[in-house]
Each structure stands twice: as C-alpha cells, then as structure tokens.
Image (cartoon, rainbow, N blue to C red; front, side, top):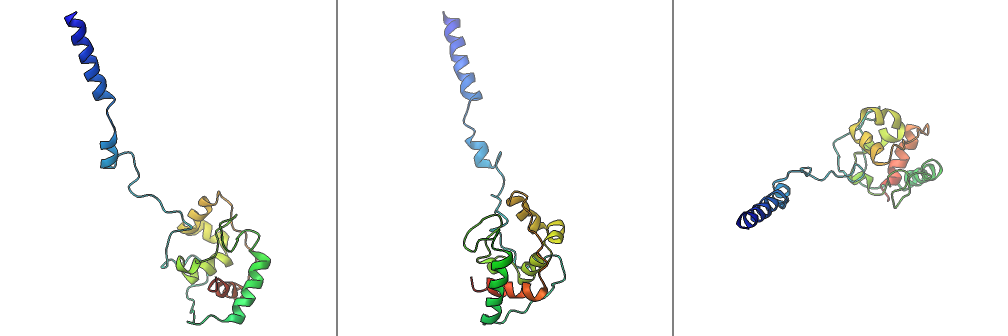
Length: 155
C-alpha cells in the first residue's frame, strides 16, 4: 500500500512537471516571432523609390487641381476596377498612399508593375499580401501617372 501511495505521488509530481505551463517559454520569446510582421499595405517606407525610370518627383506644396482632375479621370477609367478609394479590394486602397510610399515608388508601380513585382521587395510583399493578384500594366504614360499621383494627393 505504501508503495502504491509513493508511486501515485511520484506520478502526480512527474505529470505536474511534464505538463507544466509554457508561459515561461512565451515570456522569454520562444515560439513567437520577435515582432509581429506589419502587412506591406500598412508598412511605411518613404525612402524606397522603387525600380524604374522615375528617380525624382517634385511635388509642389499646393495640389494642382486641374492635374488632379485629369488623374481622377484616368484612375476611374483604368484603376477603379481593382483599387477602391476607401478600402482594400483586389488591390490596396490609394487613400493615404503618399504617407506610406515615396512619389517615385508610386509612379514606378503605376508605370511598370511587372518590373516592380520582380525587383522591388515591397512590391513583392504586396503581391503576397493580395494573394498573388498582380497589378496589370495599363500602358499609362508618364504624364498620366503623374496626374494619378496628383489625384492621390487629394484623397
């Protein structure tokens, strides 16, 4: 009987250690990523100019309303099917894009999305975030891309 009681207590003791709480591992950072990965659409990177012909864009302090209106027309014709203004859809919303991306990056993405997705790490991450739905090149001219950029400044 005494050996049964000893065996019982040893079993309980063994189980309590082997089934212990793993909070200490979590508190120490084991089993967790060190930082939660911020989605590419929310990541801020104003220094990346992207890959392409646009290396510098000068944005005046005041929005050119006529250019923005032209950009809105091009956007509504070519982009609105995948990019809703106020919410994520097939692609990210352009609202607030210039608080997260450089103007050069935005224009390079508009002008040559295929090259950007192949060579720009942020564009690659966006493609992954949006389930591999690539942005389709629309044969937009530099002037049209600049007009779209000006429209984005009004959002």
